[in-house]
Length: 215
Image (cartoon, rainbow, N blue to C red; front, top):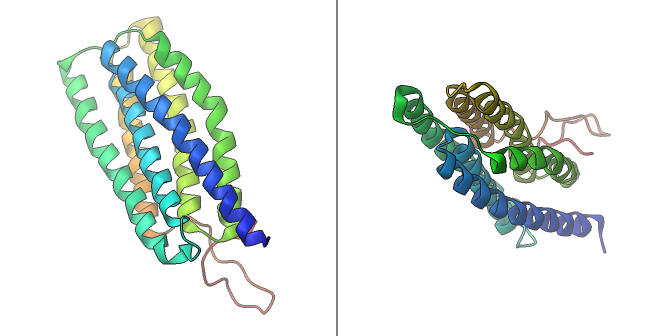
């Protein structure tokens, strides 16, 4: 079995794990967010759905041997998913700031945010390392989506905690707007195909043609 085949199989396993975790995460976050009227918690759940779409795009790409042909399409799906998330979250957060409803305490949301802070960094690192070695921009982009979930978990945890401890209702929609801003940035990078790092010199003195660093 070649190294390339091993890496492709590893990507598929990591994608499957990412999808499974995020399906559960989305269900819990959206349900808890709806109950607590939390824009940030609902946004976090929607980001989990975007992660599922992103991972599914990578799974579709690597379902064939010649996965490079599907790279650009997979990146476009990931980018559009980011933009859709940002648009909805911004609308809902602004509506909350204008007084459409104050978020309540959510124990489930706090537990979920804390759990994601532990789980997501490991999945992201494994997929990013494998994607770089394989030279796949879409796999690296998907790993950044997973890493984004880690950052958003921290933002969500702070927003929910401030609201629960001090009654700062505005902390929740502000946290949601931060989520939206980061999503736009990542979406633009995915659309441009900037998921991998800059080209590096090869043994013959020329830069890599695929634009991805090798681990």
